[in-house]
Amino acid sequence: MVKRPAGMGVFEFAIIAGLRAAQLTRGCTPRVLGVHKLAVIAQMEVAAEVVVRAPQPEVAVLPQ
Image (cartoon, rainbow, N blue to C red; front, top):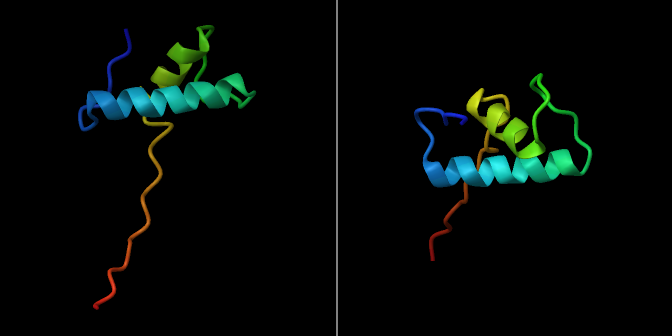
C-alpha cells in the first residue's frame, strides 16, 4: 500500500495518480525505480511528490 502525502486529500491523490497512470500507459518514462504495475508506480510517484498537480492560473474578475 502506498501512503499519500500528508497535505493531500484522498480524492486528489486518486485523481493525480490515475492521470499519471494514464500517461505511463501511453509510454511516458517512470520517475521512480522499481518493477511494479503502472498504477502502483503512479501512486509511488505522487507519494514521493515527484509528480504534483499543476498550479491553476489566476482568473481575473472584471468589474461590471
